[in-house]
Image (cartoon, rainbow, N blue to C red; front, side):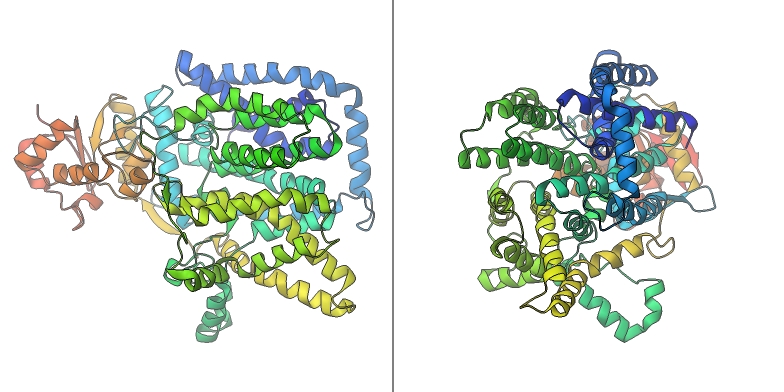
Length: 635
């Protein structure tokens, strides 16, 4: 990581800190620090997007974005200046207070002392040199979703324009919340590789999440330890897949703890679909690094506005929600839906202050992001087997302990402030409705609605565990503590195992790109026209799709299907037809506008059956590196 990269990220955090001063809300110093990273990255990313539309994507637009965001933050800094020193001194005072003091920040410090090293470790292993000039990936999430995000970020760099077309579906507009990848592309221009830029920006945003969640948890449930446990329950959450870990221990012995053989939270063969949130929403799904923290902040600020009667809080939450669709569409839809329910429950508040900026700023972008055709459909039971019994068994396996404890936290009077129990009622819809309706082509994406229910619900469950440990159960403190400890293990055992495995350099390492693959991708990026269309294998591990910054006839069909590309299946078939050559392959290449054909180890494999002999005899070889060849489609 270069010094320029560090400076850029520091400026982003400074911008975010200054922007908090715009709200004029009485935020604590640690709250401003916590939200500074994602808020600053959002400001710099949006400014960069706007400038790139006007002048193109490059170092110039990055400089203009930083300057614009800095200027925007200056009034906030001016508002904060009179009390900034005193606020910082007070925060330092509270850091030094003992744990038992209600004002102490030591619980937050202890949380970060565990979360930060683990975060840095996992993201440092996202992409690794294989020692022979190639790249390995550090986790299945990087192998799959990471390749798609590399393709998006690389297309920004490779095309030099905004908005981009879909790199895995040439000619189709990229109507997707791409700001996280755009932010990574901005950093890649500062002297580091594209894959390093994505790892650095993801790690940067992820470092702020535990502090944001803690500060919001304190505001929502009023307890420091409930907030700490809420962060742990969410970030280390998982399914009942840990029973398989117990089975593996019985079969293979304790030695597997030093190199866990598999992931335990998610196992579709066992109907375990709720992945560990950290590895799923914050590692694989890069837009979650914006959506979850900023969506939670918006809801928390709005809730404080309702309870403290602060009109400025409504406007602040509205502006934040309106600014977020390009970064994460779910963080736009979910707060709007929750706010609408809260407005119906308490119509006397000045809700217009929230809805006007949220809709005016966010609705045009959200409308632009919509796919050409609606895919909303009735889907009762979600991923469960048919019938009510199958649905109950499914959720028992995926979130049984969490569901029971969450219901208990809501019903056991005094566990959570009554105002919060009432405010949480609409969040249940984020679990109920996605069990009945699928909103996206791939129904698994419903988990992104579950995520907000799970995140806010974790604080209520944390409050329940604190009460059990403090007051006991049925008058017995020891029993209460045992139950609380057992519940925490049931909630987090699978997630802890998966996080431990993700931090193990050897356990999840997957070979990905050879030195020759990297060289061919680099040649495509530097020696071909940005608008060239390429044919390659529509495979999830086709490295040139991820790294070249060029547009392809088809990428992995799982991506194009989920993005709502109308002819996703035909594209994948056509890409394979092109690779197989002959008159039909040539005609298909011309029909799709393909000018280059890449043939490497994946293309030659039985899954795609590329006929390199035909291409070698009938087309010009324009580049070769090792066992990779690039042919010019004859005109």
